[in-house]
Length: 219
Image 1 (tube, helix red, strand yellow):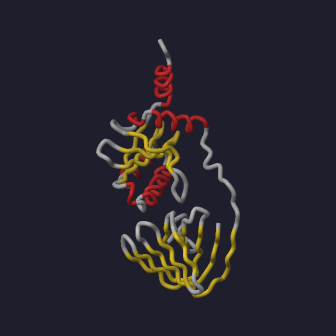
Image 2 (tube, rainbow, N blue to C red; image 1 turned 45 degrees about the vertical axis):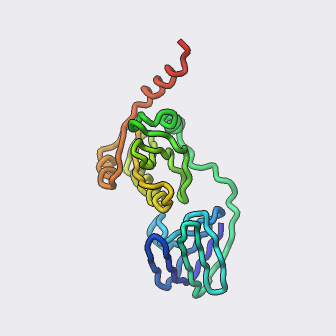
Image 3 (tube, rainbow, N blue to C red; image 1 turned 60 degrees about the horizontal axis):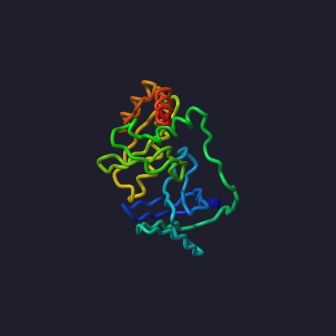
């Protein structure tokens, strides 16, 4: 990972156009080529970013980042305050408890439990901020991101909302929506999900597990 702290201005041209005026910011370049520009605040969300794959061209006074979709991010470097590289190595990913991991596995084996006609595209689908538990295709062709928790709380809804932000930057996924799935979902989390335009679904782990065992029996 490369971390550059610089006084910079930024211009993005692509699906829309945006400009960041000159200010001190952190420029983060990940090993996969993802570029994110952060201010000193705003929690996890960058001010602007370009998901991999990217081509990064460096000039003495600016960087030009382009991707196959025709988007361009230009970072004008007025003053570089620091520039460092760090080898982070392989990341094992987020560790789930046994029930949550098994619940995800059971739902991946039969996503129609979540919604009729749902077909699995991928488990642990990668984004710049972590993997989405399940990425599925609905009967109407919509792409559905599914976040699975043992207990459904507000932070799980927030997590799914963040994943969808990043996934929507990939036009190849088409129309996207999200479903928050858990054994039990708190009323506050249900309300937040509905406010964010997300669906939610409670599932019975013991019933799913029993169903899977029955499928594996010969007689």
